[in-house]
Image (cartoon, rainbow over all chains, first blue to last red; front, side, top):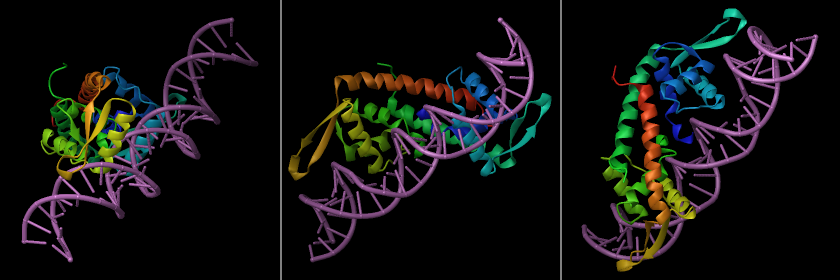
Amino acid sequence: MDAVRGHLDGLVLAVLAAGPAHGYGLIDLLRERSGGFFELPEGSVYPALHRLERSGLIESSWSAEEGRRRRVYALTARGRRAVDERRREWRSFSAAVNAIFGEGTR
Amino acid sequence: MDAVRGHLDGLVLAVLAAGPAHGYGLIDLLRERSGGFFELPEGSVYPALHRLERSGLIESSWSAEEGRRRRVYALTARGRRAVDERRREWRSFSAAVNAIFGEGTR
DNA sequence: GCTTGATACCTAGACAGTCTAGGCCCTAGA
DNA sequence: TCTAGGGCCTAGACTGTCTAGGTATCAAGC
């Protein structure tokens, strides 16, 4: 899934916009919300989460319900604004690619 | 333009599907066809062309009209098939991303 | 009690594609 | 002669994804 490069951060933010989630669950959400398309490995998602936290777009807290330790991530105020920004960027990017690929399947 | 990673090969093939072109002109075509969105540097496009030629999807020939040397690229038979394949891949990729980003601008 | 599989976290290093920043040559125009 | 632009090329930097490992807990099966 190399095609996701440069888009993953936005996708993670978009999922978190629907509510907090922990890393492992986020992978499931990305798969479900994409109709099974995204099967992202932990080695992609965890670094992305750490990256986003370092840049202040998300923040985490440990929850230890029923002995299971989970690091739960939520959007910060800046993160909420970033989602819109990333969505706009995606819209223009995909419009540009669509324009080049054209309509027909041929 | 890191977001283009993994999609550039398909875009180049799609442009060449409309007719042969040389590297420098291809950059112009990518910009024009995308409504000015893609401003790709030579350092991205030339390696992509060499990559595609090595893998047999395009082939090149030198044209020396009016003293200007140009390497003109054209799709091979396999390349023509690859365009459809890449377009299909793009369609499902962008559908997946759209599903996650949702509809509204919010 | 022990093993297996799922949940849940993490990361070092491999890998690969894009970009920076240069290089070269030619032509046209000032 | 100098500059601007067309045209080609690439070494190395960069960076984000993935591979392939590691740890720990819990539930189920034998």
